[in-house]
Structures are given as structure tokens and as C-alpha cells.
Amino acid sequence: MDCLRSFNFSTRINSNFTTGVKTWNTGGNNHYWSADISSLSSTYNIEGFKNINVFGIDAIGSIQTLTGTGLGGVVVNDWSIDITLNGQQPIIGGNITAVPNSYSLNTTAVANKIFPISKYSNSIKFADPYQSVTSIELGGTTASGFGWETLTNVNLLWQFNFIVYYKFEGE
Image (cartoon, rainbow, N blue to C red; front, side, top):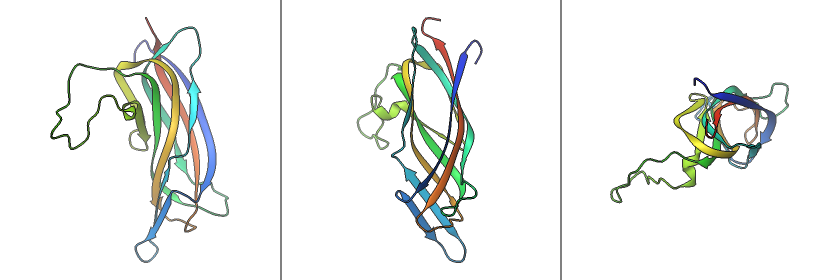
């Protein structure tokens, strides 16, 4: 990360979710839950007189339940947030074998610009950057854990600082 510049933005939000939540019980007090909240979206638009090339993003923070709420308390065991880099992805010459392609590899899919940052992998780094990045989007979130307090209600608190490592184009 030598000679790179950085900037950061943060989020702190608390939300109760009743849709996209699955809860189950395996007997006794084993209350498990999983949430897929794909409706979330926020965009950081990059402005200035020069384009930037993004070499990496770190996410420092956590998703947990907000203490003191009446409903939806949970223990968050794992989480991920989709980060989309709107720019030109680094490409190397090559092709994908048509058959078999069991994993549906695709070099031009929009999903190539989406990187889930998670509790266990909270950083993305590129030796060759995403070029001319115009915006960075925070998208869908998944989370899971145990100990749900309310059968169909999950209360989540996001607290993050995102650090973006970049160079101006041409540097």
C-alpha cells in the first residue's frame, strides 16, 4: 500500500427487519436465524477534476443488535455487505471453456464488480486497480446467528468505517 492515498466514509444505522428473515429452532433453546436484506443501497459518488484508481477497501466495524430495543434482539455470528466498484475492472487476455462451465464463469457479468466484505474477510486488495471509479456502492447485506428474541423480527445495528485506497489516474 506504499504511495497510495486514502479517504474514508462511515455508516451507523439501526433497522428492524421482518421480511427476508428466516428463523428456526432445532429443539430446546437453539434459536437460529438468517437474514438476506437485498433492498439496502447507499452510494458514495466520487467527484473532482481527476479520476481515481481504487487499489483496495477495508471495512472496520461490525453488525450487531442494538441493545435497549424491545423487539428483535439477536446474536450476530456472521455478516457480509456487498461493495460495488463502478469503474473499469482489470482484465487479462483469456477465455472460458464453454463446456464444462459448472461454476458459470463470466468475465463480463455485473457481479465481477461486486465484492462481499464480511466478518471474516473485511478487506479487498488489488495489485492492478479498478480504474476510473466513479462511485462505490454499499448494497445487500446478509447476516446470521442464533438467539433470536422475536420469531420474525431481527434488529441490526451497522457501525462501519470504510477506508478506500486509491491513486489519481496517471500517477
